[in-house]
Amino acid sequence: MSKEIKTIGVLTSGGDAPGMNAAIRAVVRKSIANGLKVKGIKKGYHGLLNEEIIDLEAHSVSDIIQRGGTILGTARCLEFKTPEGQKKGAEICRKHGIDGVVVIGGDGSYMGAQALARNGINTVGIPGTIDLDIACTDYTIGFDTAVNTAMEAIDKVRDTSSSHERCSIIEVMGRNAGYIALWCGIANGAEDILLPEKYDYDEQRIINSIIDNRKKGKSHHIIINAEGVGHSVSMAKRIEAATGMETRATILGYMQRGGNPTAKDRVYASIMGSYAADILLEGKSNRVVCYKNGEFVDFDIEEALNMKKSIPEYEYEVSKLLSV
Ligand code: ADP
Ligand code: F6P
Image (cartoon, rainbow, N blue to C red):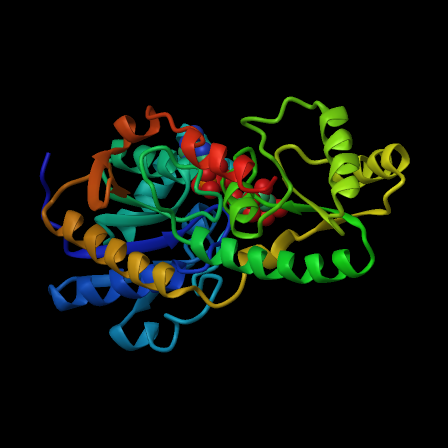
């Protein structure tokens, strides 16, 4: 069903990610250039239900492309998971003249967009998460920045680890997905990479490899542990006891979600923001913008949510092979 749009709302939802501001800026400026009005919905669906809605002009998004975080704020909102909350959200959109909404977030946020679409508001999603855990797309806003931030931090830990001849377990974010860990594992040349999708909890194998590497003269042993595997502190204690090698755990945490976006995140987020405005301008709804096989494309949200994704086998093999 196609509907002419006059006013677009834009919101960010779920965890923030560097590059979300670049996407907001692109949505605003592309829409205004095409004669639409734009409203910013603050703090995700929570702000929608509380009518935290502001007018956005082209100048409202000046000086933000280089900034991490999201100028609109973000939140998680349980009420929006209920049919009553979703109906109320659509009514608030209508009250403010909003007939199309761009939702920047992850799979959970798309379900919210789907619910708004069911309630008569045209919607389009943009993948925003550092975790890269959205099946329909090979790129998500923030992943590139998060990996670069983590990689630089891990380089630093490696310096001190080598000086002290220690083993370091460095825990990176990713929720239940191991993409950040995999990329850091390769980029940092880690000796071991523990991914929730792959790890078999064979700690003895890790212990044996640390002992072997010590014999070969390696001065450090870097283990990148994904948040989805977790337990880095207790693992460090067990490994130290079993190997006799001093072992420290470092949990990188929220630093991975902040900071100035990389060029890739700024550029891809800008293209996706512009693409999302195009979709609403064409009168389409319930779509999600993706980057797949080297192209920007869009899918129906239902179709997108049913897609599956797994750790690329070849990348995983490379990560293991090169760390010997
Ligand atoms: P992400 O978008 O990164 O996957 P969440 O899963 O936390 O993050 O979802 C973000 C928000 O999207 C939730 O707080 C909620 O407001 C909304 N949401 C999540 N699941 C649903 C759902 N099934 N129906 C409607 N809204 C949802
Ligand atoms: O989805 C992004 C992310 O940073 C995950 O890597 C992490 O598991 C989660 O969000 C943390 O969420 P919160 O901000 O609620 O602690």
